[in-house]
Image 1 (cartoon, rainbow, N blue to C red):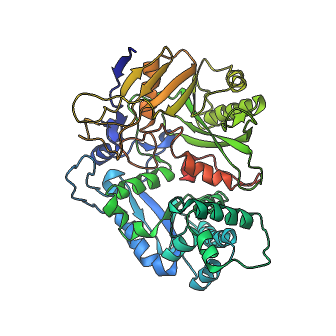
Image 2 (cartoon, helix red, strand yellow):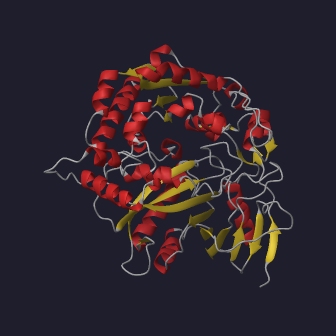
Image 3 (cartoon, rainbow, N blue to C red):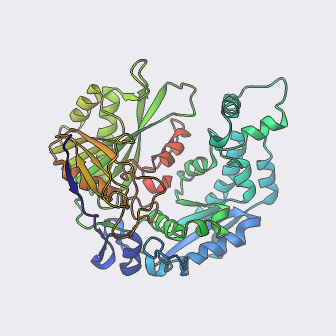
Length: 500
């Protein structure tokens, strides 16, 4: 077979004072952040609160205040692991923690909550202790821009687990799944569980997790964003393994406070990018039903989340959830309305929809019906293709941005690969190409590829050089986990930053 190939240049990003660079960390160190959304003046101070257990407060506070200080990991590849200059230089702002915005969780109350037998109820009680602190701080004059919520080691052990359930033997994984399901369904037991069964049930992630519960609680007024900090982070252990930890958390904190760390060098505010995903609602017992969701992004820094309606797994034809005509129309119409709300009421001139599964005929026609007032619509499918491999001469990995055009509307794109700027391939395995199919639209495939490459650099949840997936589809797991625990009448945030 003969293929056409192309190389797409690494997208440029813009930072403060109009400075441009391909690398988020280098751009921030040189020029500072692009600024706040919608032209709002960028802050010079981020006023933060802390809600934490008593035994870890001092260590956590010291680490958080240390975000203002420089840190040099002293790594050989300075481009992959550059020194962190501190938030005053990288983000042109300083984190401050006033004494009146501190709330210490009672050790006695925390011990009682952690001793609760039901895993789900334990999580809810611990989340309530944090929420009480958030509500208290939020009710004070001069409320903070963000509240840090460090977890103690006891919280991590009792609410998350000490083992990864994926590493358990198959029979123990099945038993654990049954035990957790029985607990979630509220089944009573004539004979109490044995100690080893209780221990097994508490390993790994539960169907109900503390991170998601705390995020849901934080959606309520006063609606202050929270930043959860794990023990290995505030103890300085995680940055030994990942020297970019300080970069990543600082970027997320700045974005949660309304700032935009960087933007594309040539932004187009008229384009609306929508990613569609599905998740199982853990508040119901119907295992064949899914709920659809949309992640909405713009070049101007808007990251939005929208919960949609129900989607069903077909009785025949695989496990891919499918949306009805009504659900598809509602989801995409609401997504465009939300985009307009955050884009000065201006409708998009073009909408690009991303999915990781093919569009059914019903979904395709419904999408075009919902977007009939939009000048240009592209329906795009992105899937990792592990059966297709390409190599280049030499020993280095395939270049990131390599594009292999396999058909008129089909192509493969390496969103992960060797970076000439970094001087290496920042991955552990052979890079896998993304198989991309344009199922509707007239945009040239090279332009579609450039947009996807650009969107792999617009996830403000970290300061990575790039992600393997565009922001419309990356980090959906975090969003899905939060939404999966939300009831129908739950107050939800439409800000992507609230789910991070």
